[in-house]
Length: 297
Picture 1 (spheres, rainbow, N blue to C red):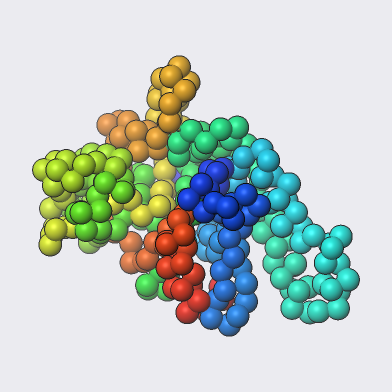
Picture 2 (picture 1 turned 45 degrees about the horizontal axis):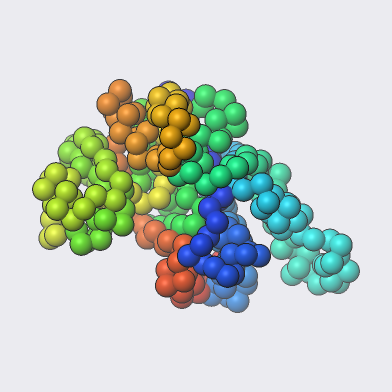
């Protein structure tokens, strides 16, 4: 089975929960200060672990009016900062880092934000039918065991020979905020075969229909924000796309995942990691405080 070499990072959302900062700063470019005082954009902290994990190229799915901002960022804006970059070694090193990332990214445009599945669908030409890793563009992923989260997931994908989505435990009361997974344990610790997924179920649905054996103490298994999909995800997305196009509704990745697991095995790996969503002001504050204790990548 072909290993995963490509990643898709959806970033096209308006960022309404970060308004008014999101008027000028896309959520992928929200700043974070690390323990040594260095400044990184959230997207840098997403991309660098992906490339460390064997990903060769990443597709950023963005809104059309964001392209100039992202391109300017990765070029390093030499028109304004050129003289300072030449005089200050630290700035020059930062620009080199940005250029190294720029060489490994391409862009796909999402004209309207119509759901995560629709965003991933915009990367189909980039993927060319290959398996892909999907990493949410407003989440930071920090490993507890020193192995990047993407690498944990890709290794599990290679072992299983099938799609593996990242998962973590959340309190049952928070189930309506997540995509919830109902799975069955396998002989491999922390790996579950998925039986069903549902996006943002009610508390009653999560308690009665989406419990996973072994996940106890009023918790459930939820999406982590990283997905290692087999090439079958493209046919699954193609299956749900006509209905989305007809009613102009949202095209959810969870729906495609459900279609996929009805056709082939799909697993969930409970990652040894922390997923930091920074898509709201409260979540951004928490992520910023957490990241400020982390050494640079």
